[in-house]
Image (cartoon, rainbow over all chains, first blue to last red; front, side, top):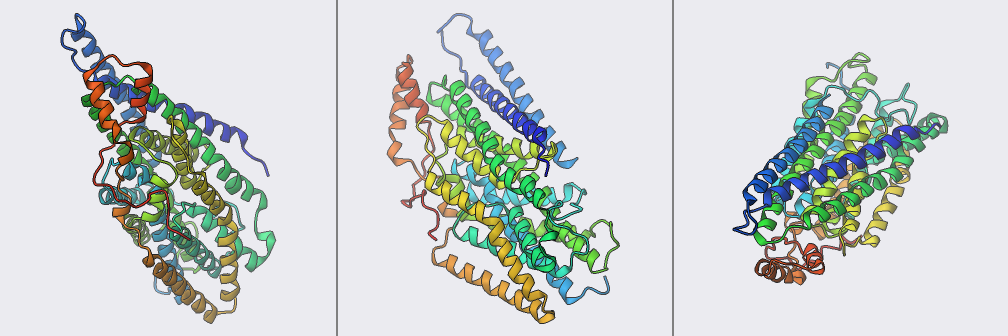
Length: 76
Length: 421
């Protein structure tokens, strides 16, 4: 009986990192998209809004890539 | 296939029945959180899961070459043994479904195989070390890995999402979490279809090889693939509502961010484990992820009484399915009449469990998100929050806990209580 601790450890590590990273990115994306123009609150908020939007889409793209990789893993 | 004997036919049918129970037993894994947080309507969720299961069954041609992965010695495994093992696995699956507890279908199959093999060829046919490394250790590791990942992810998503202030934003985020949940639930369904339908194909193919219909090492015929995929998809579509209720709202109360974190954790753990060479049970990963997400939200609770019952069921899976498998093998050893008796007992047993289940039916109406009437101040707080932009940290935390759940007319039924034993 030899327990493959290395495999178990890597499953543990990978799962932890990937889950937290994915959820983190996704939440950032959601928060970024939900940013709304704050009417005359701070000057020049248009730029930061655009930045938030772009950042959000980058985050979502990362998540979509992860899902695609997941499907690839299932098929392969 | 000119000479499919009666025994072989019975085994094939039984394998498909097992596949079917596997389907409705494991719908909860993919869809319980999606349903309980209201991301998808119950019927839509199971339909989507069923379709993905079917697709998954056709995706991979890498059919399991062994059915037990080395747990038992499969050389000279007789068809009767496979049949007896399936009987044990099916009855255990039905029983756990009746009491609404998620438990691993693969472990039930392993248990049945161990019992039947021991009865058929003695203890030497079981590889004890492999039982520990492939069943017992993963059973402990899966909920811990998935739970911890879900817990940290939930913490993180609440911390980042804590900046959300007003109603419109909250609505937008709920939509976002909904999409995320659906995506990860889809992945779990797909993986489930691939893994578990393959398992049934492996069993049927092995039985066909044992019966001399197929040459050893040949791929499963198309009709086997179609049958296995259809059986698991039908089972999934039927929906194991009892288990869905336990997982979705019995273990803990899930809000969309938690559901998303749990589902993502489960999908990641399943994919990572099956591709890094340390297989973890889907059911146990999902249950662990749900509990982790429950603990991750401030004020979230896990109902340990339900969780304990679930752990007990996991512990009993191997011995219980094994005992039934052994008993069935004892009968099938007696010859054809024994096989017929076991088949009859299986039908009677399944029928009895079904009849008992009808006394207190649980349908798709029982698993939809129940209105959180007690937390209706959530509306008030968000309204206040919309009027007065500057929030104190305490208020933000309070709002954090009361993220909205669209509350359709809530059923009065206590969601915490799964079907009584």
